[in-house]
Length: 130
Image 1: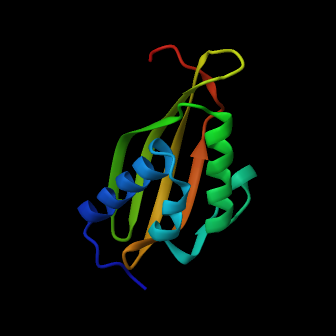
Image 2: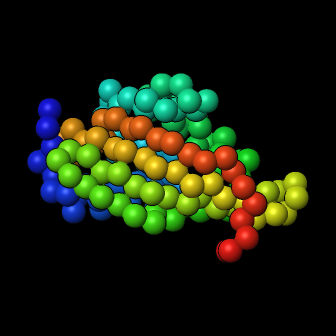
């Protein structure tokens, strides 16, 4: 099924998803934002997963990365897809060092929900500019 959302509406939904899912630490929003058949091509450990796998991944990230914050640097939408360039930042609890990684995420919509996700990330590095 295609989406009837405009590119601006899709971008708003992705931004809201990241805000709730990452910055507000509400992993349960994935059940509202994704289709029941949601397929993450690049889930935990680089393996495909669905809603439950991504929810569990975020719960583990909340524990391992206190203060985790995501910033969307760029977002482009066309057709039924949105791509984001993000920066994820947190403080390592063991060393108290600022850490970050960068990522690109491509989301595909069906109807008003996200149906698929593809992602690439950099290796976490110590942050020096924030």
